Image (cartoon, rainbow, N blue to C red; front, side, top):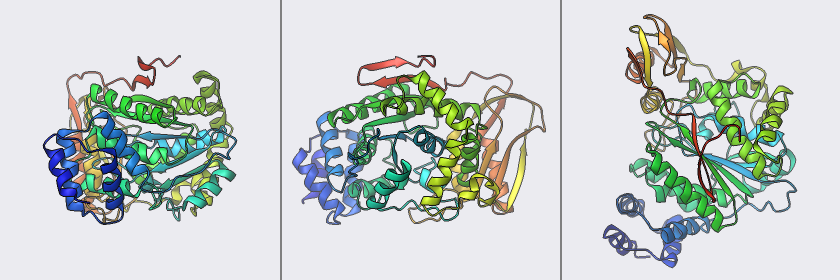
Length: 445
C-alpha cells in the first residue's frame, strides 16, 4: 500500500476509491501503514473532508477489517445507544440495564475518554473487578442469558477503527464529521443490531458545538445505518453544561446506581427516558414512546433495573454489592466543598473546563498509556439560572491530595461563572432526527 499517494491526493482535494479505502484500512490494521502516515491522512480529512461515497467506503472498510457479532438467533430486538461525548454523561450506565430489564437485548460497545469527555469503559472499570475486555464469544453468551453485555472494542471488532480512534485523540482530529461518523457506525454495525439510537450532543461542551453540524452528523450516521438495513434514530441533546451532578468515574457510577433506583437528577432521567423510549420502540418492546416510558418507570420502581445491573456486574467479574452499597466503590482521599465566591446568578457551568479539570486531577488521559484515577472529580450542585449567596456550596471536589484540591478549586473558579443575570441554557432535548427527516422535540409525542 502506497499510503503517501493517498495522503497527497486527499490533501489536494481528491477522492479515495472504495477499493483503496479497503486496502488501506486492512494494511493499517495489520501494522503495514505507520501511525504517522495515518495521522497525516486524518489531518487532511479534517481540513478537506470526505464526500458521501467516501464516508460509506471508509465505514465499510473499517467494518470489514474485523469480525462481527452474530446475533440473528436472538428472539428479541437488538438495540444499542451511542453518545457523541459529553461531561457527566453517564446515561449508558443507566440505559443499558434499564432497557435490558424491559426485554430488549443491548450489545453495548463503548469507548474510553476522548479529549475532554469521559469514557463509559473507564467508569465501568471503577467498579472493583469489572471487566470490559470480553471476547465476542463471551459477549454473545452473556447476551443470550442476561440480554446485555457492556464491552470495549476488542481487537476482533473493527481493529482499524480501534487504532485510528486513539490516533485522532492524540492528533486533535476528533472534530471531523466524516471521521466521527465512520468510527461510530463501523463499531455499531459490527454488533448485528436491529436498531440504533444516537445521542448527538450540541453546545459548548460538545465536539461539534453548533446545531447545524450536530444535525449534519446525525443525518450522516442515519444514512449509513439505512445503507446496512439498521434503522437509526438520533436525539440532539444539550452539552452547554454537565449532565447530572457527578463528573468523574466512580462518582458517576454512584449517580447511575441512584438513577436506577429512581433517585437520579431530573436532567439525567429526562435524557435517559427519552433515549430509552426510542430503543424500546425500535426493539419492538413498546408500540410507542409513551408506553415505553411507562415500562421503564415500572422497571425502576420495581427494582428490576437495579437487579439487572447487579447481574451484569457479576457476570463481568465485578462486585455486584456496589449496587446496594456504593461506598464499596473507590473513594477519593481528599474531599472539599467549593463555595460561591460572590452572590449572584449561575450564568454558566462550562463542561469543557470541567472535563479538562478532571484530567488535571488524574481522572482522564493526556496519553493513551496514562492510568486513570477512578476516585477524582466533581459533584456540581449549582445549575445555570440558580440564584446563590456568597459562601453557599456550589460543588464538591474529590481529589487524591491537597494539590488536587487546589487544582479543583481553580477549575471550578473558571468553570462556574456567576453574574448579575444569565441567559437561559439550551433546551435539554431540541430535535429528533430519523430517516424521514428532522423534527423539533416533542416530549409528549
